[in-house]
Amino acid sequence: MLYRARTLVTMTTPPVTDGAVVVRGDSIAAACGWKEVRREFGSEDVVDLGERILLPGLINAHCHLDYSTMRNAIGPQRSFTEWIGRINALKRELDADDYLKAIAAGFREARRWGTTTILNIEAFPELLPRLPPPPLRTWWFYEMIDVRQRIVTDELLAGALAFFDERSDWLGGFGLSPHAPYTASAELYRLTRDCSRARGLPWTTHLCESADEDEMFRHARGPLHDFLKKLGRPMDDCGAGRSALETLTAAGALGPECIAVHLNALNEADFALLAPGGPLHGLSVVHCPLSHFFFGHPEFPLARLWELDVNLCLGTDSLASSPSLDLFPRLRALAATAASAGLALSARERLATVTLNPARALGLTGRLGSIQAGAWADLIALSDPGDAAGEAVYEAICENRTFVDWMLISGIPIA
View (cartoon, rainbow, N blue to C red):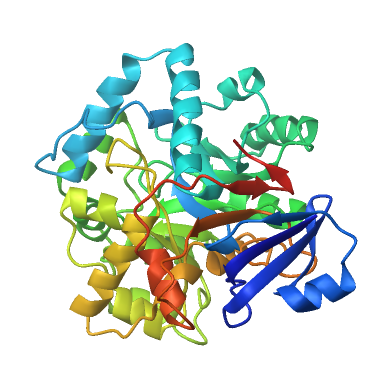
C-alpha cells in the first residue's frame, strides 16, 4: 500500500514535499518523494491523504491509564505529600471495573490526539488478565512497592515475568517499574535493574519528583518523611545529605538504561552523575510539563539537562495531575520552558521528544518514532496549513490543536 501526502516528515530526513510511504504488512518498506516511490512501486494501491502532513505516531513516555477517570478530581494541594494522601483515598473508592473503564477511556483519548505508543505504569497488574489486547502500542510497566516489608529475593518479579511471557503477542511490550525511591527499596531497584538487563526489558521509575522527596532523603525530615515513617517504612537511607538520585546511584541501583521520570529537584552532585563520564550519562529523562505546573514545582532544569545530553522525552502523567492525554500542549509548554531558560530549542528537537527520543529510551531506534525502511508502520496525518515549508513544518505540527482523524498502527488503519 502507498500513502501519499503533501508533506512527509520522517524525523530522519528533511521534510519531503509531495512525499509517500510504502507499507508492507506491519512495517515500512520505503519513504521518500512521490515520484520516486511511484517509479519503484507503481503497481501498489494508493491512498492519497491530500493536503496533510504525514508523520510518525506520537509516543507518550509516561502515563497512568488507571487514573483516566480522575480528571479534576483533585485540586492543587499544599504539598506533594497531601496530594499522595488524596489520590490514595480516591483509589480506595474504586474497584477493578472502574479501573478497566478508566484504561479504555484513556486509550480513546490518547488515540484522538495522535498517540500511537504509550509507556503505561500499571499499578494493578491483576487487571491485565481481564484486558483485551491494547488498541495502541503499549508498554505495560509492572509497578512495584515495598514500603513496609523490604523485598530481598526476586519472588515478586517471578509472577510479572510469567505474565509477560504469556502475552508476548500483545502490541508493544512489558517492563518493570519500582514506583519511586520513597516507596521502593534500593534492593528492589537492584533486582529490577539486574532482571531487566538479563531479560532485555525496559524499566522506569519516578525519581527526584518533589521538594518533599528531596527533603526526606537529604535531611530525614518533612511531610513525606513523617508520612512514610508512620507507615513503617525503614528510614535508614535518609539524612545523609544526598538526593534520591545520589542515594540510589551509590547503592549501585541505577544505570543509564533506566527511563527516569521527572528529575525536577536536582543539585550539583546530581548533575555531575549525569555529566559525560558520570555513571548516569545518557540517561533517558521524561518530563511531564503540565503535571509539573499542576504541582507548582520549581522551574524544570531543562537547560542543564540539555547541556548534559540526556535523552529528553515527554509524557502526560495521569489525569489525576494533568488536564488531558494530548501531547501537543506539552510540546508547546516545552517551548515556553526553553524560552524561560534561554535555551534555543527548535521545533524539530521538541518533536523528537515524542518520537525519536522515547524510541531510543525503549531501545527501538529505527523501529519506532520515525518513518524509514524497517520501522513499524505507525503513522498519523495532520492538516497541512499550506504555508509551512522546510523547518517551519515542525512548528506547524507542534501547534496542532485538532483531533487526529487518520492513523495507522502496524500498518492497520485505526478508527
